[in-house]
Length: 282
Image (cartoon, rainbow, N blue to C red; front, top):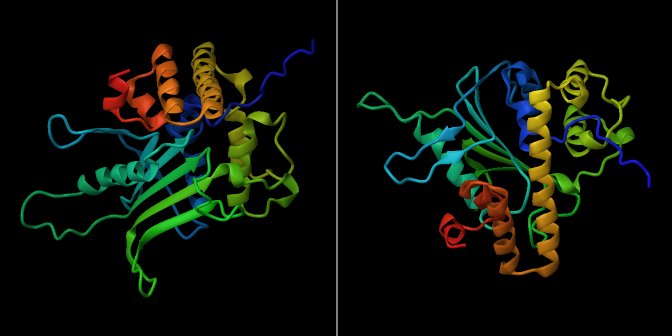
């Protein structure tokens, strides 16, 4: 039997891999480069400050939000960056709900505040495509704002949702032209690469590949990463099996598997699209 090939670089679709590359102070230049590429240099970010990624509601019993990465730039504009591994039944609703936290926390007490808001950006890196052929097969980058449906002008430009349907991105190395292309190529292919491609010679990618090399991890990092990979693979295998069976039974079976794996109800809800109430009944 042929020996299984070991990955050289981390999988950014794992919780550990994503936060290692984009959620640490040491690697915030990777996040800055990615965000600038995402907005085609229209939103030029010079620096970011990481914020508390767990946001609580205003009252007892209010639902909370846990972001993968939450930060603000030098102008106080807020960025939520999420790696969404699986399709969720109310994914769009969840995106909108999450965006309300950085909006509400800008509210100032007293009569002096004039309601002037800083911009809020929600970025969703999706390891699935929107259902029902909502977008063309070639269209994988979506930027959504509040728009007037009559004359199509942007009514409010301080709230932006960006979604990347990663399974649709199929450019090869020799087709990479922009920094945006290169970042999506890295996200889609990093764990399958054996070395840094010639097309990715920018200094920022030199750093990324060094940070992503599993052999350079500490024993503690390697253990955390392997546990994260196990959860990711179990998630993927559960979904693949359940998709074959189909229907609501799919989500329930996945949720039961996740419970047996020891995942929290919040994690299960994010991975299956079931409500917390439905999960608690299992």
